[in-house]
Amino acid sequence: ILSYQKSAGDLNYQLSAYGRSSRVHFEPDLLGDLFFNGEASDVARNLYSGGLQLDASYQLGDYHTVRGGFMFLDEYVADNSLTGVFPLGATGNPSGPAFNIPDNQVLHGIFAGAYLQDEWKILPQVTLNYGARFDEFYSSFDHENQISPRVNLIYQPTASTTLHAGYSRYFTPPPPEAVFSPNFTAYNGTSGSTGSTVNSPPKAERANYFDAGISQKLNRNLTLGLDGYYKSARNQLDDGLFGQSLVLDTFNYTQGLIYGVEATASYNQGGFSAYANLAYSIARGKNWSSSQFLFGADGPGTDLNYVRNNWIYLDHDQRVSGSFGVSYTWKQARGRTTVYCDALYGSGLRTDAAAADGSNIPNGGSLPHYWTVNMGVEQMFRWSGHDHLRARLDVENVSDNTYELRDGSGVGVNAAQFGQRAGFFGTLSYLF
Image (cartoon, rainbow, N blue to C red; front, side):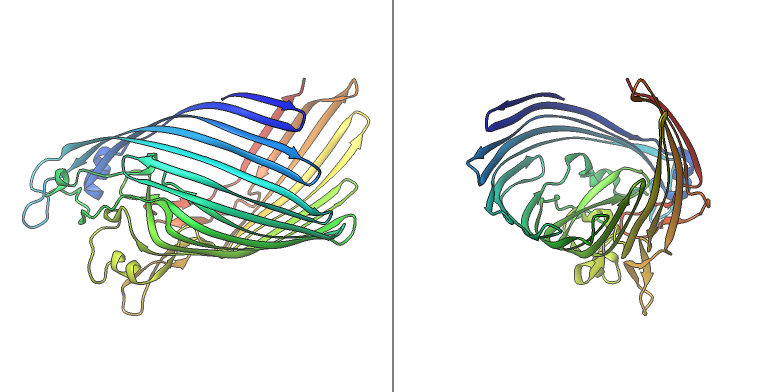
């Protein structure tokens, strides 16, 4: 990243040029995957990207701050795979020795956007932010654009109360590095066939997002907050792990609906501080409208047919999430000591469930709830009036809970995943 930042009177701006190179490479257990799963995929994806970004603000009188900018991103993806498969006979069983199918692709994507907004101080207690941005996405598989208006109102009736409400329209293109379009013909008659060749290209997600909330200081130490949100999307984007390789592939739901509420609390007095966050959310989608081959064959009783006619929960949907923590700091002449304890809670991510007729409901169930408690201590050593040396010890999951995040079933979940067991981490740093 190379940035130039300038402040000249009421004008402030920053211009940045950036580049990135990243690579993901999955190497299979060749024999094990072949004999147990019928295919073994060696997948390597290389992403090269570069772009420019400008952000500027201008103080226009006492009541208006105008902001604007643009960005340009150019991405190039080389997707190379080598998949070992068996030829299949008329009975559907292997009829010969395994062989490899190469499948190499190149994708290119360009993303450009510009925005303009005004922060208007209508009254000392009322601030209105309004504006719009234009985005365009052009790639090997998609070409779309959108104008997105946005407005947000902040009202402070008293020094201790802040209310806000807003609306935003979003345009989110699919990431080219997560788009895969196999050569279906090459897999015909082999154990690598998905049973489907339907592959509509991924589209950009277009969403309307509403939120409103309140922050209330009950006294100088305690602050409470409550925020609600509602998102309605067309071409809801999602991704998952399909097949045997642990590399993400992206797809769309025709419709998406995500809404919830979040409650927060924070308390500070002297060296003591505490916080609590609790969220309730629901995330659902209907009808897979791109990369349909990822979900296997179509027809009565299949997942594709069920999702076409029913809303399902998204794989990352978790009804209740929470985080809580306390800390205390002692200050001494030669340094300071901080001890803390925090906890995380989740009601469980999604998994498949069986309907009354025995058919499968994708993401129809949820895993058991889980929680972890973490503790730590940090010591700062001071000399010459400055904090120079920091020593820290963290213990994560102090009770060594064993809990499952995924059980191997569900949309885009191809393997079981477990949370981290107990871990001990030490840090020693010196501040110049």
